[in-house]
Length: 520
Image 1: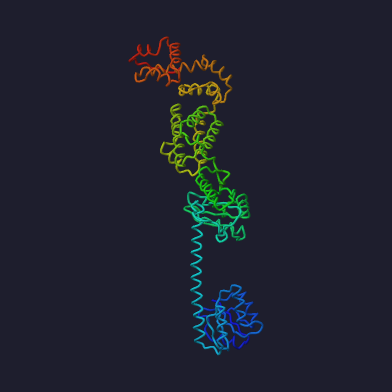
Image 2 (image 1 turned 180 degrees about the vertical axis):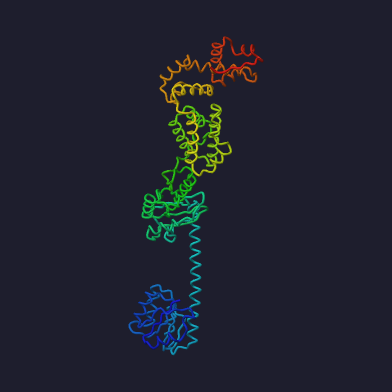
């Protein structure tokens, strides 16, 4: 603790210096006051813990020094030392909070007891102040927690006391960028405080698993935006900001709205799965549109697996990439849990694998087994990594099929029809899938097969219906649907055209026959 000695007589000051072993008592003599004004100036500058002061000094008396220092908020302890024993001085001194009054000549034991008592009182007061600070910080943190979670059930009118008075607020969350082996996270709140020159415009709180920063005021928001734009979006490798990933919600204009910004930042943290390569920031502008009623019923069907299988079979790389991008956008706006998205993508890859192997059995070795597919997708942190895995697998398949010539493309089209005849196939959609003009493809198709597209499709469907009619478990209308005819009467008409009899007559005539048919 710091001790200041004040007396206008140098011999007295020297005597007090030598009277006790101040260091062993826990004191350091920080200065000496030669008169009242000099003493007051040193109190202001040095802020000592204990002041030993004489009452009678030039310029200002000791009591005047005590009074002025206390009025200015000085929290140290005064010990009055004087040759006067008049009780009136003691009374006046006590009026200013002085509790110890010693008379000259100074008794060594009395002085030691006085300074030790003063030290004990100061330590007690410091402990009390520390506890008050801790209680205040705890209470403030509890209030911030309630504000973030919109659980405030008491008035927030005293914003100045909370140091939450501002025209605008914004919430930022941050964590480690490296998810696989998280490195120590830099104190981003401290970085922002330094950017704001330690101005009281940044609050930090740990809420659950989140490192939460509350920015207060236009200046803090501007400083953060500058950091995000210039240093965080594309940080230098090895810099402190390169180790951070953060999200932030929209600016709000009142304490009561802070939870809105916080919830947006939390939701974005969950959307990290959708980040692009080396993306360190997601902001409220990146927020997917809130789930609409028509989107809440998102169905994880076979549409994308069928489209991707079509692209691979047709060798259409451009369309494959378009389908994958559409899949990414659909999943981003789906509102599905990330675990469900992973499962859906696993299903898509397995379905595409099965479809390609069914059409091209010799390509089976290009695909990982089902367990490896699931493991690969589960271990990826980002959607773009999974889609890169998809692209690589699909490119390998198309490369294995070779560069398409006109004859090989037509063969692929015929094979596609033979494996997808049950779908609503159209010449126009096949032409787009295989990269042909519709009219040109129709001419090439007729010239090569001797039939137009619709006739060829009917032949394939009727051949497969003949095979199904051998199985009495299917009813005729079910077989019509299985081979791609939604209208059973139309199926009857086509069947009679190609066989000369009705489906029922065919079944009756060929019941039990071992007929092997193949598509033309």
